Structure formats: C-alpha cells, structure tokens
Length: 118
Image (cartoon, rainbow, N blue to C red; front, side, top):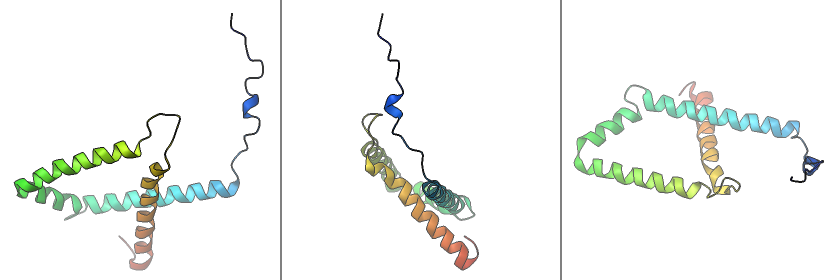
C-alpha cells in the first residue's frame, strides 16, 4: 500500500491571497477588454462595416481568395507560436493578445468620451 502524505497541503502554506489593489486592476483590465471586444463587434456588424467590406473584397477576385487562404495559414502559425507546448508552463508572449485588446478598448473608450459614441 502506498504511503499517505498526512500533511499534503503544507506546500500551500506560503500562498497569500491577492490584494484589493490587484483585484481592482484585474477588473479594470477585464473592463477594457470587454469594451475592446464590444467596439470590434460593433465595427464588424454595423451597416457597411468591416465584415461586409471584407466579404465583398474576397468575393471580388481570385487573388483575394488566395490571400485569404494565406492569411488563415499565418493565423494558424501565429496561434502555434503563442501557445505553450505544455499545460504546466506559460509563455509571456501569450499575454500579448490581452494587452492588444486592452489597447483597443482604451481607444474605443477614448472615442466614446470625445465623440460621444463609436
């Protein structure tokens, strides 16, 4: 029979909870990302938005269709680069999409305050 570790949680004794300030910053990061996602979604699906223009350009010519396949390949390769090889380790470059989305959220927040809307 295997020997049981009677104090198996002792390795977690030095873990401290997050501070209130770090929780507030996490909420602000989340809010900026949500504003960014909403802004991009609004730009994609509005009348004469990015999606209708993109689909119109793709259907327009054969070269655009080929470029779409190349763009999908590049996105797949980018996903492979940003993903970590194992579940236990993380790469710092994996935080880049979060920071990009936060910057987009800050841009749309600026537009809301200066122009009164998207």
